[in-house]
Length: 84
Image (cartoon, rainbow, N blue to C red):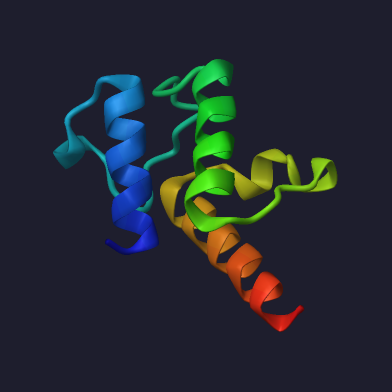
């Protein structure tokens, strides 16, 4: 499963929204699809699933705006980890 598909599956389940209503451009927080609690659960999922650490300074709205942005953010974390 690729990152975007994984994120969509997680958000769909956590927010109780059908997967077909989510895509890479879906704004998840501003639109009210997810709550602050679901964002925290998502961050935990990302750290566990991809064995990465999300540093506090990276907890900004720009990194969690929409599914496409989160996918890129996660890929960047993975890439940084591999370079270390």
